[in-house]
Amino acid sequence: MSDSAITEARRIRPARLSLTDQAYHRIRREIMACNLEPGLEFTELDIAERFAMSKTPVREALLRLQFEGLVKSYPRRGYVVEPIKISDINEIFDTRIVLEGGAMDLAVQRATQQDIDELHTIARSISDAVYRVEPDRSNNVNNMFHERLVIAARNTRLHRSVVQMLNELERFFYIEAQATTAYPVQYASHLDIVAALEKRDATAARAAIVDHIEGTRHVLLASLVVNRPTTARGVLVR
Image 1 (cartoon, rainbow, N blue to C red):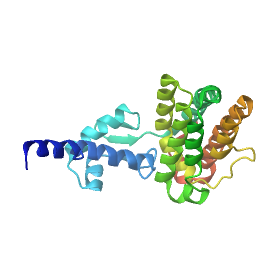
Image 2 (image 1 turned 45 degrees about the vertical axis):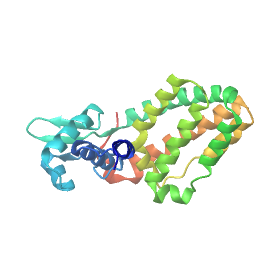
Image 3 (image 1 turned 90 degrees about the vertical axis):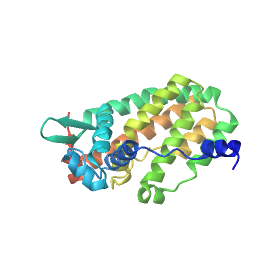
């Protein structure tokens, strides 16, 4: 093989994740899906044995997860998966209303037909039935929709802030997806949001995104307090 061919092969070959990165992604996913439940106490050895990994990459991964606020370290005891605080949920959803409501105001003015067509495609790409049985896929589609909506607002800083909110919501999404609580009657779906945006009706568009966010908050809080007693042990009402 020629030098140029070797160089090209190296360029296109996917980079292999380090052991620390592998440990980080696997532990984080288990926390997000609540397989490592809120409030769970564990040690480095527990995680190393769970994933058949050595303790060093697990320790380094847990340092990253501490920085993200997903786990907390206790000297000579080990770690605990950070509990879910009702106050955190309410703060995040209050912030979503401010950010995504503002993004919708701008999107009504700035969205192109291509933006609207792409939002339609994303909104139609998953059914309610799939939503609960394929939470990983549902989470990806949900995030894609909300990020695409704020992209239509054409504001880079607003986009960055909404993406941060979506990352913080990931663990809550898995709980919501398994909830049995019904959504409120006025709950606006992704398709309802796109329809209001396409009409360029600023009042209806803002109302749709607010109804959507508030409906999600309602289901999430109800599922934590009423429908998931196991998870609720890791919920702090404060």
